[in-house]
Amino acid sequence: MLPLPRGGSGSAGGRLERRLRLVFESRREPVTITWLEGASARPHPDRLRRALDLTERCRPPGVETNHVLRTSGHLLDDDRCAFLGANNVLVGLLWDGPDRDRVPAAARLLRRHGADCNLICPVRAHDADRPLELYRYLRDEVGVRCLQFVPVVEQAAGTGPAGAVTGRTVRPRQWGDFLIAVFDEWVRRDVGTQFVRTFEAALASWLQPARRARAPDAGRPGALPVHCRCCSVLFACEAGHPGDRFAVAPDGEPGLNHLCGGYRAFFQHIDQPMRVMAALKRLGHDAGEVMRITARYERDNRAERPPGLSSGTGDPRARSAGRRSMVHPAPLRPS
Ligand code: SF4
Image 1 (cartoon, rainbow, N blue to C red):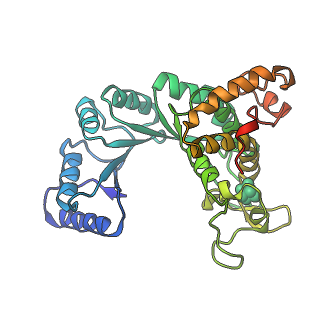
Image 2 (cartoon, protein in one colour; image 1 turned 180 degrees about the vertical axis):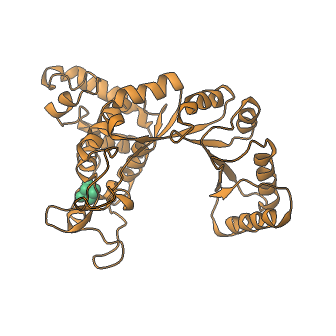
């Protein structure tokens, strides 16, 4: 991640130019450059323009380059959004911090100017109980097409028991229910039109020819607990975010992810529809066909479905009444 240039010349500009040249030397195409706009930065319409000009100067001929701007949205106005849209800069908007209330308006402004926006949405304990309300608000009212849900996990400071967390921290079961409720809505109507990073990453895992997790061997730095190494969804979960691995596994081994139970429930729940989508893609079809297959399955099996499971309400009681996915792949199951 690179800071936006402050001045056109001088030592800071020279340092940035050297870093850009290193980026182009060390990466394969296409090169994605992420620019960071600090929350305290003062508005300056030319900073991003200078960043793009500098990149053009450093870019070897023919190398494809994508730009991402990470910002809290506090500096976005009509002119900047128009510039971002015209230059195909993807804007990563963080829905957090002191400018949180301004982010939906910033996302709408970007959409109006045709600029792509990826909204990073932290999920706290109180957000996790209203998954569909949150997802539909962002989709329908804010109009965001790319979403990244990030669970808030904070270890409690002080003298509490090992593994104690703050009140804002999402609980494992809550996180699993949150992802499941959003996924069930997405797989019914939004595949191909809404990009939810967790689901797209999961599909990439199901598309791997051999489902193996990239985990260091036992005894090496970063090695995972046995509980993870024996887990059937390790290939997709990859033990979650390394910073959240402070829980204790059932066998007493430390290093388990605080959200383990939620991840396990979620990845087990999506197994069938993910198999369908992976099979569709391997056959050269659009993964979005899963929505038609889901609808057909639900129509044909209405009587078997646990009451409330397919209502799309996101009601946790309905989900716990039946953990089975509503999508069954039947003839499309891959090997
Ligand atoms: S679901 Fe739990 S046990 Fe399985 S890989 Fe993830 S954190 Fe490890």
